[in-house]
Image 1 (cartoon, rainbow, N blue to C red):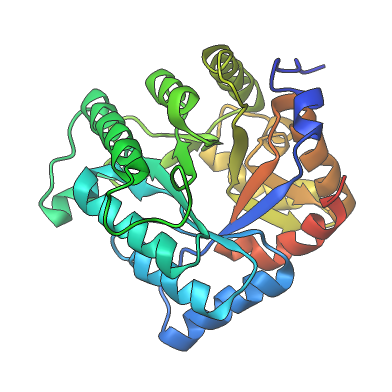
Image 2 (image 1 turned 180 degrees about the vertical axis):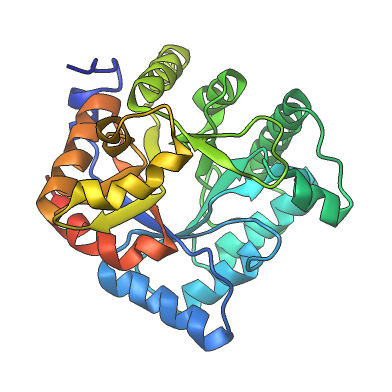
Length: 309
């Protein structure tokens, strides 16, 4: 029986309603983009998200366009690459987009992990420690700038735009515990030495330890953060084993059953996936789930079944 993480486990998790987001990762023409955003709203997603990678859409214009064709979903970055930004310029972008979207923005931030993108942009990548240092500086300055009464432009949301921080290293978890309204767990780590962003899935047991570490660091918070998990794969099927088997080359040290238990993979019938989502809420406290664009349609019936539970 897996451990229940305290104080972020089942009792605290049940008090917060589920939220569901889709991260729209594919570049698109104007009409295709707007159509995708409308479809996300039709399916019931609570948040429309955009990543921050070269070769993808620029996040802030895309979010403003999404706001123009939707009414209900909140809009966010998932996540901005801190190495692409400095505080003053980012504060201007955030405040402007929050105003243009009627206060629907959620700001997601991370260190960045794809060295090749920094190389293409002519920007320094730095060591992991340097990247976390830069992110901390960015977060602290954004808090100061966006909460200032005299900041121009002025964001709609006060005292500041809600902030999500994504990462599972010790220093990132500490930063999330200190500053984030939403603590996002990636469920994967960078392959050592890889420059193109190749990731290794985090096992269920490894995620137990990471969430427990976060819980310890966040024990002194006045208000608990919302806990987010990025789901990499959603497949609705009657044959879980057949679908999961091709993934084993990515995790050769795991058995098929262990692969099926990876928190970032939801594979099975709608009923089986609903059960996994509810079990992961009990185990880890995740009530905010993000799926990738490729899983937007597949996850919709799961989302409908889980909502309100």
